[in-house]
Image 1: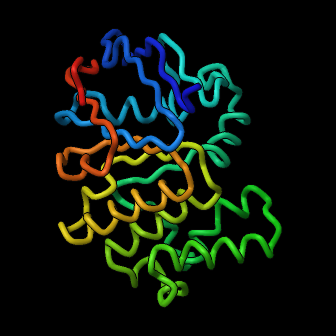
Image 2: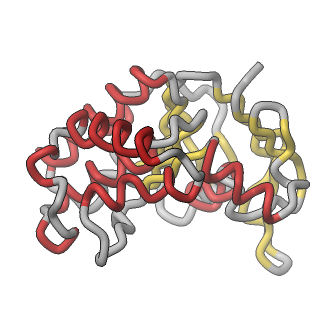
Length: 222
């Protein structure tokens, strides 16, 4: 069974439908890129898949559990434990160091201290920032901040990682480093990835490419 499914999903704002009849099956460990022009509905769809918003028609299921019918408390629990999110603008907490940002979701899940420290050490080294663990976000480059954000999103071992233009605010070299990191870490952990991007080259790290136009997925995507 697919780890994440969208079945006939639609979303409207007031009387205007911005998404209609979207279907998606995301398998465990699969990487999928979602491409399309600005304003076509990519980020809106990603927000629905991550439980940040609810569809006006259709269903979204995570490991077979309907997200659209879950209580706010259950949605928050699922987002902490089963879903990871990476944003274009990092969203690191400026008053926490790199390693403190990374471990925050684990503390929210109530992991034991020893397990948190072991996981923190593992991931900060995996993203190549062991020497920058105590740095504040203001002291990190854009590429370094996004690597911390990747590690934070993967910290709890989520089933699904949702990435919204993860390289959109980075130069080419930093962006490619983040993409390579995403591919390697999701492969190692077995997390599925759905990545919104404008970049054809960024999409190449994915097993499958879906294209969106005017709120619909186009047929014949690779």
